[in-house]
Length: 203
Image (cartoon, rainbow, N blue to C red; front, side):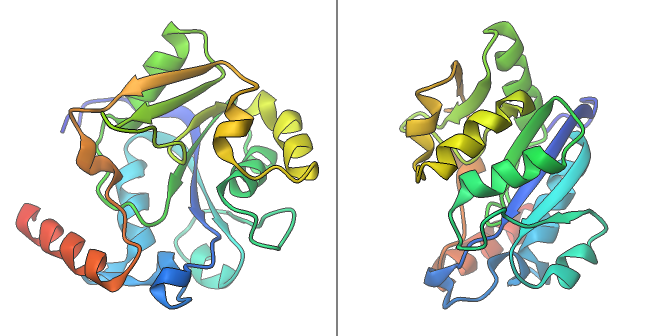
């Protein structure tokens, strides 16, 4: 990893607002992973990449606030998915660009934000999304905050699918086929054990 990359004037929103049904309903960001809450790994990985961070959560707000960053809730508390978390982050952010990252993906490379940002600028796109070589990873999106009214209208109309909203905007697909492990997530106890073993090997 390149530790000399500068932090960018971007707000990262760590999405921790879901129900986590496959983890038995536990608040996934607070599940212990290699000795500390899962969200702590994500925040640490992002700290050298962006200047500001927010946590999107809909429960355990005080526990999330203890990590030192503002906590924002979805406008609608019905657990509407990652787009609702992005919209909440857009409303709270003061920067022109907002990056979303899920709380259950603790293996993030140092160049994640820089590569998305470079593609967004180079292609004059409104959204930059990584492609892992097999599929898009739309929850890892770098989005222009000016799209907040569009997203709020989409959610207000009942829209929930990320790709359907993307269809209305200029999207840069960014090749991350060299870093597919970036998008390993923890959805159940077996995946949790596998990622813990990976973190132990890289320590």
